[in-house]
Length: 86
View 1 (cartoon, rainbow, N blue to C red):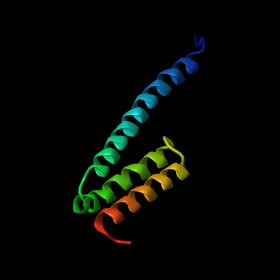
View 2 (cartoon, rainbow, N blue to C red; view 1 turned 60 degrees about the vertical axis):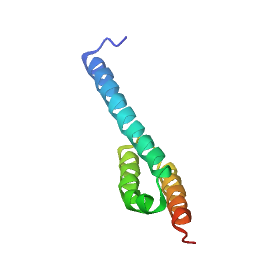
View 3 (cartoon, rainbow, N blue to C red; view 1 turned 60 degrees about the horizontal axis):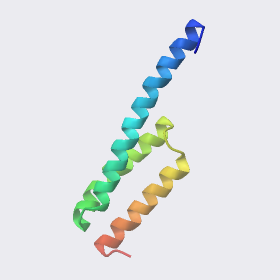
View 4 (cartoon, rainbow, N blue to C red; view 1 turned 30 degrees about the vertical axis):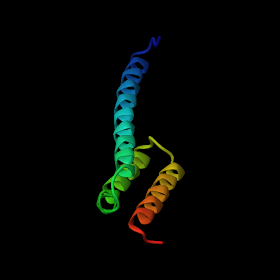
């Protein structure tokens, strides 16, 4: 366990950040899952919102920028296929 005052504070802060990051990540994963289960027109309308959530995760450092790009790319391809755009 930490013995210094600053180290104890850092431990508290990192625990709070971890919980917050887990919340944002789980919320985004749920949004991605819901998007995949929608029909074509709904998917196209909801895509920008989910892409924004992914970008925010990346900006906060919860996920890597390449992972964010891969997720957005896969979702965009799925939406295109559902709407018959190729």
